[in-house]
Amino acid sequence: MSLKARVHVTLKNGVLDPQGEAIRQSLGALGFDGVEKVRQGKVIELLLDDGDPAAAKAKVEAMCEKLLANTVIENYAVEIG
Amino acid sequence: MSLKARVHVTLKNGVLDPQGEAIRQSLGALGFDGVEKVRQGKVIELLLDDGDPAAAKAKVEAMCEKLLANTVIENYAVEIG
Image 1 (cartoon, each protein chain N blue to C red):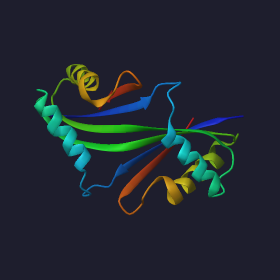
Image 2: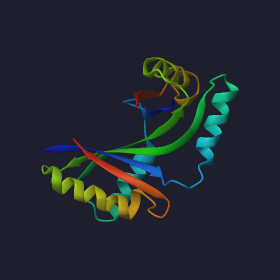
Image 3: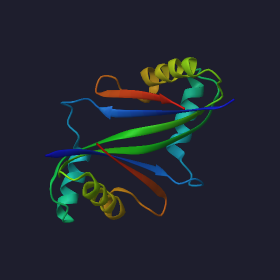
Image 4: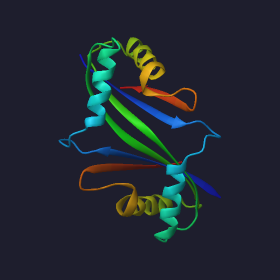
């Protein structure tokens, strides 16, 4: 059985996000007013050969700690299914 | 009033994702078995100076069409709130 997992990796509060700021300025230049703040993060979708959602979640969290997120500056959130 | 919007931008099916493939190989090299497929996308969080969720959604979809997504190769999904 296969399980889908989705990981959101976002910058922690207080960490500068120049890419988000560039998007905000570009939106303003295109005429989109009222955009107060933009933050950009990553979403990683995994297809796992695993039948147990709880075990899969623990495994994906380990992946985040080791590779998918830089936990000094980034938060991650794992959704299974 | 401010509204939060979250946009997921993901590659369309059939579009090659070398970054996702690099993650899959790295996970294998770190000893994580059973990862069949990895796709990487973007998540963009916006804080909007707007009180009407329906109008905000339409506005963010226009932002996706014009700037946030490359609709030739990417899909987007907008969540408000």
